[in-house]
Image (tube, rainbow, N blue to C red; front, side):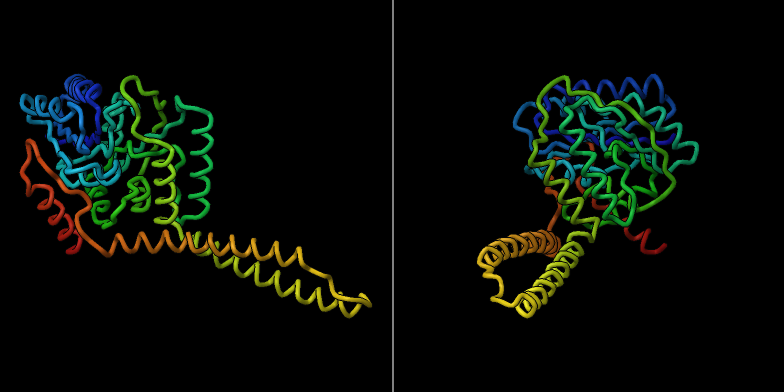
Amino acid sequence: MKKISIVSPCYNEEDNVETCYETVRAIFERDLPGYEREHIFIDNSSSDRTVEILKAIAARDPGVKIVVNARNFGVFRSTFNGLRHATGDATLVMLPVDLQDPPELLPEFVKLWEQGYEIVAGARSTREETFALRTSRKIFYRLVNALSDFELSPDVGEFQLIDRKVLEAVLQHNDHYPYIRGIIASVGFKRIIVPYTWRARKRGVSKHNLFMLVDQALNAIFAFTKAPMRFCTFVGTGIALASILFAVFSVLWFVIGFGEAPRGTTTIIVALFFLSGVQLLFIGMLGEYITSIHNQVRGGPMVIERELVNMQAEEGAALSDAKTKKLQRA
């Protein structure tokens, strides 16, 4: 019997975890009776009753596994760490417990996977969100696709069913801040996209604010593109050429103009502030890269696990090591 793993990150979701579990269980019993279910909940150190509810579920259902983090490490780090514990033949990378991504699509995903597609990616063709957010997302994806070496589908998130070999390739990445959808897109493999409607949250409050969205966007740009540094090079070259042209123009004006050179006080002031702003921009870009490099070379665990339920503490590490050794031998 083939196994399907599902990874669900959560943080202070006491209103949603039970519903998420029951919905997934019902889908497997009704539409996927020939598959074994492995539902991994990753809790980011919730302060409400989320862990208590999850433990009660896990006590009566061994197919439910729980990873409780020592603190909130963020949705991408905790989800990537949860993927290390997945043992299924195929894995649903992320099913948030708020069910804004419809788990009802899972049977269709599995059917397409059985037909030979190694990545079945859900695309949020319709979003029940504000116009401002939709516009911001479109601008971001157009920017990333214009600057990166591979295509990142604008509406595809982490709601993807990936084959075991794809998961092993993804886990080979040693990134302190993994941008999971970008990593999946970069590894290749045979993919199909399934459009769906991204539903509005019905219960609880979203933990994603504007700062977190901007942070994720910057992480994607600096992790998967070379454009920021190239932008600095091009702008610096352009400013240098403009300065040379301005100097030549000033000399010609003095020679041909039969008078004094332009007084230029305004020009000096404008140039001073403009070049200062450009320098600060470039320093900020360099700072992003240096910070990322610093965090990467410091090493240390991506996530610290405080407690595991229905799984062995060594399971995730052993699986990850086995995958790495297998890939190295290949």
